[in-house]
Length: 143
Image (cartoon, rainbow, N blue to C red; front, side):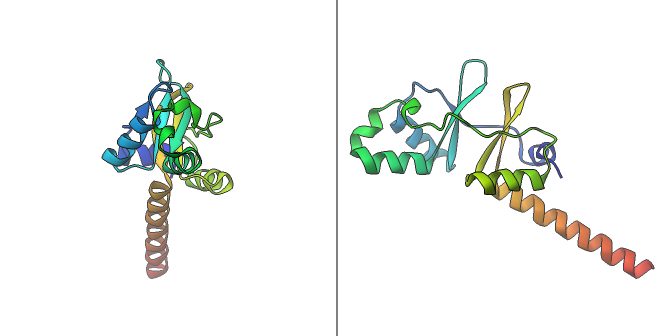
């Protein structure tokens, strides 16, 4: 299974924010949408950063409530690891585990095309494993 197949099942909608919006705005969006990260994009839909719940919590813990008025650009991760449609579940798991993050933007020709979360990857891997086990049972039963 690939990132493309995951997106075909879950959809390509991604919550985004601009770098100029405030951390408070990002926090409100995270809460309202019940998501763990927001992708920061430019006017051409190119990924320029990502902000997670952890980023917001760390900033508020360090600066207090005044952090809420800062722009997202002050806390966003600028070197965003992304994946492509043809990347496999194994590759996605390796990227997420190695980088210790839970959200992976999917890009096509440098533009945001979707996002894959660790939950999406785990769900897809379980489905893949179940299909493999069923195929093995069928093979054994007909052998």
